[in-house]
Length: 95
Image (cartoon, rainbow, N blue to C red):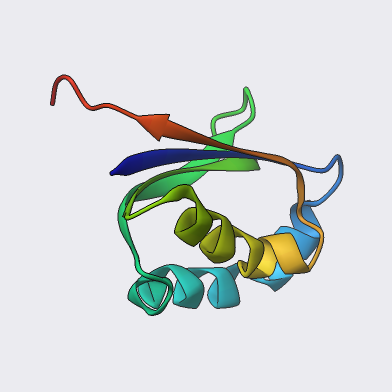
C-alpha cells in the first residue's frame, strides 16, 4: 500500500536540518529495516526555490504503523526539525 508523508519544518530549523542531513539520508537508505520502501522523497522549498522548508515522501508499506515507525525514527523527527507530520494513504491513479 502507498502512503504520503507530508512533513513541514519548524520555523528557523534550517541549521538543525543541515546538521542531521547525512543521518536523514542514511535513514532513507535503510528504510527496508522498517518494512517500508521509499518510492520518492525530497524537500519542499521556499519561494526562493532553494531553502528547504519540509519533506515529502511516497512510501510503500504494509500498513500505517510501519510508516509511523519509520517516520518517528527519522533523524529529522528525533532532532526537532519537523513541526508537523501528516501520513495519508494514497491511491496512485497515474504516472
